[in-house]
Amino acid sequence: MVQRKAAWTGDRAFWAVFAGVLLLNLSTRSLFYNFDGVACAIAVELSDFKHLVHGNHLGYGVVAWAFDKLWRLFGYQGQAILTLQALDSILGAFGAAFFADLLRRQGRGEREAVLGAAALAVAHAWWFWSLEAQVYMLGALFIVLGAREALSDHPKPFWLGLWHALAVLGHVGHLMAFPAFAYLLLRKKGIREYALTMASVVAAAYVMAGVFAVKPANLQELRLWLLGSAALGVDRGFNWHSTPLGYSLWAWSRMTFRIFTEFVGRTGVAWSLGVVLAAVPVLAALRGAAEKTRESLFWLIWLAGYALLFIAWEPYTIVYRVTDLIALVALATMGLQGFSAKARTALLAAWVLAAGAYNYATVVLPSSRFENNPDLVEAEWTKISTPPDGWVLVNGRGGVYVPYFAGRRTVNLRYFDAPGSLETRLDLIAATGDALFVTGRTLEQEGLLARLRTYGLKPHTAAPALETFRVARAK
Image 1 (cartoon, helix red, strand yellow):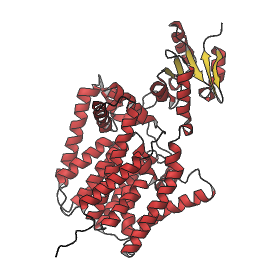
Image 2: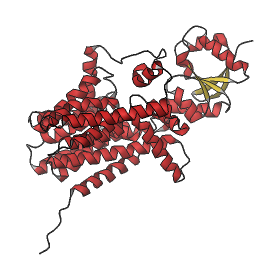
Image 3: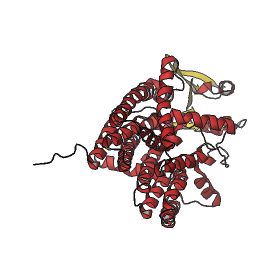
Image 4: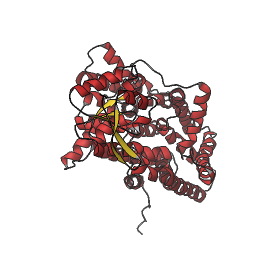
């Protein structure tokens, strides 16, 4: 008698999750275009490796450049922002697929593993940042691989060290997974090999990036590169992005729910539904954490490690919390173990469908609409309302939007706060015979309209709700 083959195997589950999540990610294109993603796209198109190897996330820019070049080998001639978005969609899909494999290896069963991965994929933070060009999904993929290795029956320190190193090269914040990995390896006495492997790979990558790409001329340039986001101010001094402790704890705690659904800014039924959908997996995770098993303690240490950093550094920034979703969804699936298999499947499926629909309607679909990105509207308006050889005054995301989407040279207002500094720069441009423009929306910056009226400002082009002005000294 021929035995019937099981409907699911580890490989089938893995590839089913990957294909399904990738299709989900590619079905809607985000037009949110975060600042860092556009800046990376610019560096990719220029092959500007000095800026691609960012001190806080060394590896993403290089991977993005290689992925973009691969597209162009097959004839793609468009902007790199699209290839970077596709890259993140693939990274998010692979991360979810490996997470399904992790759950399966921890005894969840095929259906629960697949549905657990689906829950991760449709959670607000994971889904949205799988659609955007941004660094965090690269590190998320490799940290999932590290967790899968660490939780295996016989973890291999070398592979754990390698996966962790690659996650750190995705973003340096993943160093905070060290306590969780060390907790499991202390029993195996492999912590030395793991730590040495991780440190060696990370150090070698930074040395090569410094020697071949950044090439710092002095210690100050080296310092600025390594500080990365902590030295973004105009004065390039060290600036830790912290807030008062009370607010930090509140923002971090609220973000623990918001990574599942974005209920902030909603009202009425939409707000209530978002809160409930966010609270359910958190409560299930608390139930799973109460089990006090080897796995649950690992995930709790994982969450605590990341919390040490991200309560102190921008607790209000959602993308830093993508990694928390891995631990919380894993704990939530543990918290369902007291129910029958059918009930677990039904509960997971119901949450995936409800949260997926909610996040699609409230976050994913709105971010795909051109009119919902006023900075993009402004950049496209600048492109049609100014001459190709003109200069444009910009602020905020306009610093990357206008050169990238409009193809115009810019004067970034963030560097001209000092009295007389802007006027001096405008005089230098005028001396070359070039024209300079500013949009009505940019003029909304505090104090700018009065400043430019004193210098010289006259209407240039107008359309419904849009206008552009020529900046030139009054004669």
